[in-house]
Length: 283
Image 1 (cartoon, rainbow, N blue to C red):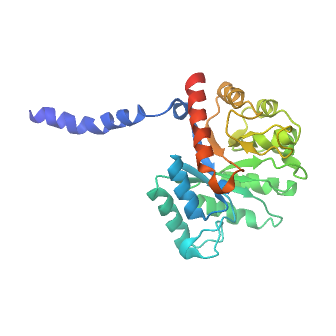
Image 2: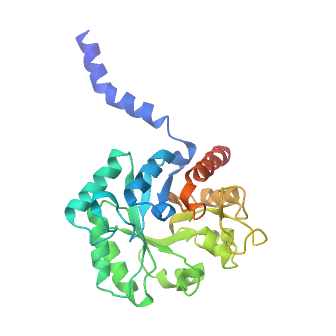
Image 3: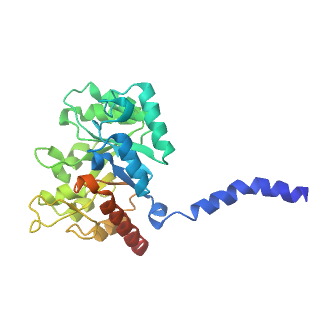
């Protein structure tokens, strides 16, 4: 009997781990992790954004620099300027809600000296990547810091005048840099710029670090092509996910829902439900 209980005690952690893993979705088993880009909730404080992310059942968040923290923090904003105590409190606040701050962006600066501060900050906060749009002159520095801090770099593609609006420009800029540097693929911006988002994903095969994932309206519906519930717009969400599957992508798909700002949670829940249905089908 003693031997039985001894074996049970030894085996219990492994049995629990096996039980937990069985609850993973197909997407999670594929290495696809849904996150929220906090700009989605920029009309609310960062603390409120954490609450809304928890309400959505999402476990990861990418924080945008400049997001007002709210509450006792007054006018303080998210970024490397935060003191050590505030950083710890925010990390703890996220963890208390079952959320991890995995990245920050989109970080931009014309002052090269700020880059090391950003990398130090991301490392101290336990982040996995920095979303950014570096000045072309700063690439040697960014490459060096990426290796020094063992931090991945995800280059976002804002529309022109950002040089990275076209993935070919990004590939040229990073061709000789370490493989931890790649794209934060904003699939909506590509389409709005007249590019085929699926072809852009194909061009970046092997260099996609993360995505700002979305679906958008057709130009006939709205010239600005605002965000819509996934599966109801023109981006062919299923087709994009199939491309990521072919590329064996692993990483974060950050929900950046830039519409219905004050009441977007119900819309985003429908996006997540669509994502689960499609990934269950194709994976």
